[in-house]
Length: 461
Ligand SMILES: [Zn+2]
Ligand SMILES: [Zn+2]
Image (cartoon, rainbow, N blue to C red; front, side, top):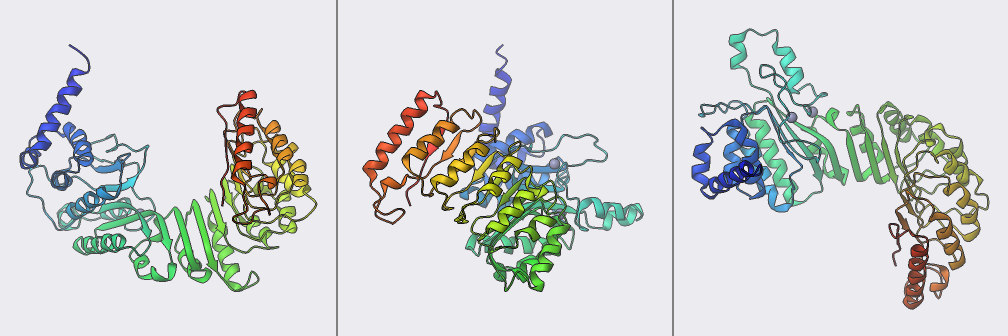
């Protein structure tokens, strides 16, 4: 018999079960628990909302993760149905199996299985259970240890719901939040909504929503449009951020109290790996931010920060900028003549840097020739973006000549050379024919250097 036959049989059985939804729902009481995972995957992929709703009620494992299953807009209804049917106190199940599900994880994570392997059936556990909130299963169960067994059966069974939230004021978001609120109410306090990745658009409009979340659980926060004082008031409720991204933040002055408080919260985030401050004027004050960052920072984004020569000088001496994997300094005009500090930054990062972006920085031919010797020492570099800089064609050719031996470098976003414009970077003044010739020339050079695996891309604004 073909080894693939059992799998084929399983697929056929599941397929025919799903064709008869009501029969599938009835069968949940009897089918072996091993069939739940493949049936869940097929029901999710096929959009069988009723079957999924019934499965959540009698899920025979401790945890259920969406994991690598794809969530597009049509699947949102499925997620909502799963939340609606998640058994929380005091909803007793009529099923003979009884509800075992304690952790429902609706985040997308390509490395996560549908359910965690069971190490012990007596004390089941999940790799992804909450470790921070006072409402987490672990903390509540620790408190319950002292309660006698009879009382324990009367107490609510703690349940966790893991979700990533994007608060953007859309109708879909509002409907989702109403459902979460309803579920929290229904659970009489036994449900912990655990949000680890929170994205906020317009912070001033989200203050009410943030009240029902325990911000201790957040490890990734992204805020677009908000005042720095509102941001500090939510940062003070967080303890272990790994990624912080702020853009279009308003505040009065870099010498003011609010900025100082912001820095003090940032300093507490010892596990910060990624910091992005976009359109955040730091002119002559970058040192104050860099000084308090943890040494383990991997990704630093500082576009549109109005960085000065003094800031670059400090960056070149900062121990926090010696082992970054990613550095984005785009849209900071570098109009000074001395490129030594930036050169030193690149040399300091040469052992770790994989991604560098310096688009739209007014980098000229002479600046670029000063930077090339440092760039070619960054042997781990995979992505280099230096688009929208006033570079001439001979310099672009020179750069390509120097970069093609860099075997790790796969993506280069290059500037359209100045001769292709009637007036450099003036809208409507681009000569597309000249650009086409440039592209052909670069393609030929790549072929000659046997670097067909390298992608040189540009964009017209
Ligand atoms: Zn798990
Ligand atoms: Zn949590």
